[in-house]
Structures are given as C-alpha cells and as structure tokens.
Length: 120
Image 1 (tube, rainbow, N blue to C red):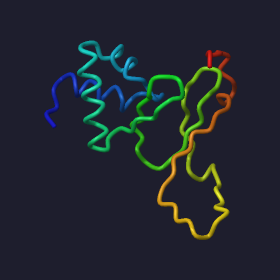
Image 2 (cartoon, one colour):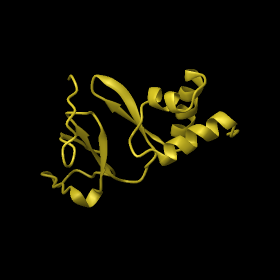
Image 3 (cartoon, rainbow, N blue to C red):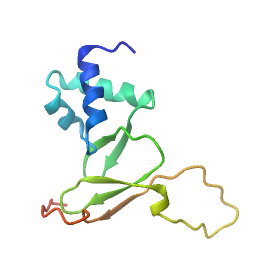
Image 4 (tube, rainbow, N blue to C red):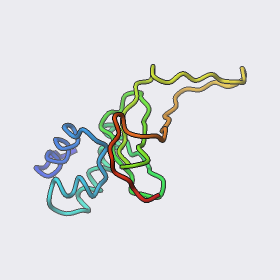
C-alpha cells in the first residue's frame, strides 16, 4: 500500500477517533474525494486495520479496534460503544457446536444518557 498524504490523514483520523465513524464523517474530517475515502477504507479492511460494522437502516461505521470486543449501539443517538469481551457471558445450549469467534451488537442507551433521539 502506498501511503499518500490523504491515506495517511484518513489513517490518523481513524486512529484518534473516539467513535466509530461513517465514511461520510471520515470525508468531512479529511476533505477531498469521497471515492478516495471509500477506496482507502476498503483497502484498510483488506489489511485488517479497520473493520466495517453494518448498521440497520443506515450507513456502515468503521472500527479501528480490530481486537476481540462487542458493541452497544445507542437507540437514542446511534453511537457505538466498545464492550470488552469479559463484560458479556455467552452459554451455548448445544454441546455439538464449536464457535471460533463472535461479534455482538447490543442495543440500548448510552452510559449516563446522551439526550439525543434518532429516528428508527
């Protein structure tokens, strides 16, 4: 991968983002061609540097934290919060299943309340 100035700016933005931005939010933060943002995000996914998180009825979000974790999506503001694996306990009801990995997105409210309401 050739690390152009635009790609570097996108990578730096994702690394410091405290949320899981959409491609449009990345584009707003790093002006230039929207196609460059999408192409760079696609390339970063292929390299395992970022993970796409599809959202119900909305634009995908991108997570630079590719380590094992889950998410909580706020039903009020739509923001995604990382949840450590140890905060969720899963029990399989069948012994003949073997799970290699799982990523779960819970729906609820932001910790402390966000005060914003989004249309579903």
